[in-house]
Structure formats: C-alpha cells, structure tokens
Length: 544
Image (cartoon, rainbow, N blue to C red; front, side, top):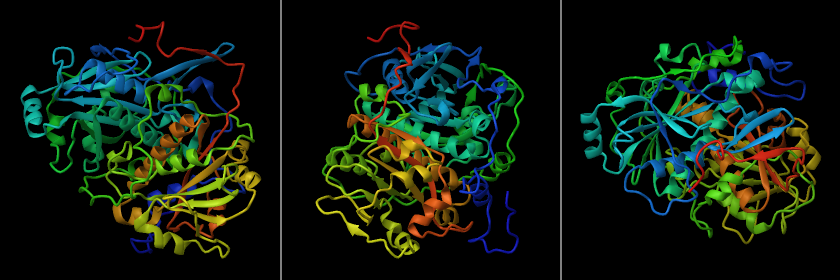
C-alpha cells in the first residue's frame, strides 16, 4: 500500500482510506491483488449459528394483514424474511446454493443481522434482549437478556422506538475470493442489507432510522462482538451500525447505548468454529482498524430532492422474493422511458420514502449513466445529479471539454445529457473489466462519490458509509428492475481511473471524487440448466 504522508496537510494527507482505495483499484494495466485461484478447502460458510443459544422460531407468512403496535413474532418474521431471509435454493448437478433477499458479491454474504429488543407484544416468547438472525432456518437466537428495568425505562423514554437492528460484517467471507478489494464489497453488501431492512420495515408498517453517533466499540458491545471466547475461533465480525426500529423512531433524543450494552447479561451460545486456516490480505488488514469509527454527533438534517410525480417506493413482498442477479443480458430489449424515469427517481434521497428515510447524511453519490436502449432517449452518456449541495463542485471537477450538460426536457429529474448520441456498449463493457453484461443491458451506471470532501468532513471511517449509500442505491435499482419486468445486477469490478477519464475527473490519489460501484439493468437470459427449490418449504413449516 502507498505510505501515509508525513508532510501533507490534514486535508490532503494520504490517509488510510485513500491508501486502501488506491491499493484496491482495478487498472487498465492490472487488477487489484486477489487470489489466483479459489482454495475450496478454506471456503467460508455464508451462515453463522450460535450453538447453545435459545432459539425462537419465526413464522413464515405471505402478507401481514395489519401493522402491530409493537413487535410480534409474525411481524418480525415477515420483516426479517423480506430483508435478510432466503428466497430460493438453486442447484446444478451436485452443487446446491441458496439465494437471499439481500444480494451479495459472489453470493458470499458477509453481513450478519441482529435485533436488540426492549419492547414487544409477546414478552414471553420475545423477552427483552439481543437476538441473532439465522436466515438458513429463519429463526432468532437469543444471545443475551436485557435488564427488565432498563427495558421499561427505554420504553417509557422512547415510546416510538421498540428496539434496534444491528449489522456486522465477516470480512473473510469476501476476502477468500476477492482479496484486497473485499473490504469494498463488504460495505456494498452492508448497504444492500440496510436498504432491504428499511424497505421490509416499511412493508410491516414500521420505520428505521440509522443512528450515526455510536462508536464501533459501542456497536460491538451492544451486539456481543467483543466477546472473543463466544466466537470459538470463528471468523471475526466487524461492527458496522445500529439503526432504531419502531413506529416513529426519533434520533433527537440519544439512546443510552453504553448503558444498553452494560444491561445485557446471561449470554448464551458459541459461534460455529472455523473451517480452515485463513490468510488475511495485507491491504484489508491495514484498513480494518484504521477505519474504526469513534463516537460522532448527529449531522444536520439532510438536503433532499424535491418530490417527483411517482408514488413512494413500496415494493410488494412477491417482488422482493423474486429478485435475482442477472448473469447474462439479451442485448436487445429496451427499457420503457416511464420505468427508467421511475427507477432513477427512486434513487433520489427523500425523507418520507424507504429506504432513504433511514439515512441521516446528505447524499454524496452521483450516477453516471451509460444509456444503451431506453425508449425515447438517445444512447449516450448522462448524469443524474443526486447531490444538490455538491452540484457546483462536481461540475467544476469535470474538466472534459465536450460535456454538454443539457437538461432532459419533460422530466422533474436532475438528469443531464453529457455526450449524445453515442454508442457506448463496447466502452461500458471494457470499463467493467470486460464484462459483457454491462454493455448488453438497457443501461448501466457508475456511482461517483464525493470521497475527498466527505473524508475531510467526517474522517476516514466515512469511506465505509459512502459504500453503504452505493449499496442502498443498488438495492433500489434491483427492485425497480424487477418491477419493470427486467433484471439488474451489481458490478464491483470496474476500472476506477478509466471511468474518471470519461469526465475529465482527477485520477490521482488525492482526487475529490471516486467511482465506488457499478450497476446494470436489462432483459436477463435465464440458465435452463439450473433447478430451483423453495427457500424454506418443505424444510420448515409452510407459509400461512
């Protein structure tokens, strides 16, 4: 990795986040360091269980008839299934693997989910405590009990909040396959899972609000991740976040997270042990502790985009269960303009619509669009400006002289044509590590984030949350693709600096803007060799 600067000013120092970003870039002259082959003997399991912890079976239901005033087993089961649960099993010959509501790079699933509950409608079945969600069997494992007096105090002080969702990452699951770039992919997956939870909570009639204040050490204590003996030698989980869950969760009154962590007792369960020895990639090892988050303050209310003509984002449960990642595109089916416009509008931050209603920060990512086949729109290069507070700075950073910046008529979207008409199919595939899928859909896009300004304002840890925002955008696009009768897929392999070159953005190590994630939507070609089985039935009770 490049060394940290000892002479640069704090605003331009080659920080750990920047050093990692540079070291994990794919370039025209070579890809980022990664395994030359897959060591199947050390393949990590995508599932974690805490053996010995009391289990709470969650029901499987098709729809929830009404939103409960407090969590019930049925409502929590519905939310967790639609957010982090299995959606199908696939098989090809002797190989069998599961799919989930939350997508993951390489289907490796580094994200682990927890529920920290202090008020429920079924206290006998769900007493206050910390629960780990086990998606393979759709159940909760009670890791610890929460002091009943503290639970009552929290319920009285925060009547619209019943608990919190906690997320963590087992980085080795991605590292095993992707090497140095794995840390990026863990953050993408975290963002996808966060969006899934926000959408699923909305379907149940609840809301989530990500609390940006707790330090990683506090998150770790609240989720029991600092209890090393309980890990039983299994891969470590990196603490990520806590998000309030309730009917009207309010961030204005801080939660006493340290007291909550201290109030957890009667710990149960040990994690499944490791499968084989692990080798940590040096780029990842260097960044894990360097991007540790300390306690922060609540940011100012985000600047959001004006309302559009489309209804709030509210996908049906069936749409969530049918979501898949496309593997190949047909290269010819166009996308209707209305579906394209709606898809982009749903990526804009809005305080009243999931999943971005849970997001406490200002938007920091713009979308660079490679349009191949959208009805009524010339093929070419476009930009969706998602960052109203940074619009002037972004345009000034784009030094390419031939960008037209022409507003698209007939839409409320902050959408601009940059170069049209232009066939970018080959170029787009080349930029996505020569993956044909990027050039054979209706459109693809790159998410370009305000890396420099955000790191300067919030510190190196914010590198993580920039990728979370990218994953959330990707999840919205996944579901919008399904609603349009198409299919989407996230693309984590792209040539970072070559993408910047299209706009004339600075490609150096101190560049203020950076490409963080790619995505594509089109008509998928199905693989007829694959067999599909239900997610849980007949392995568990049928839906009712």
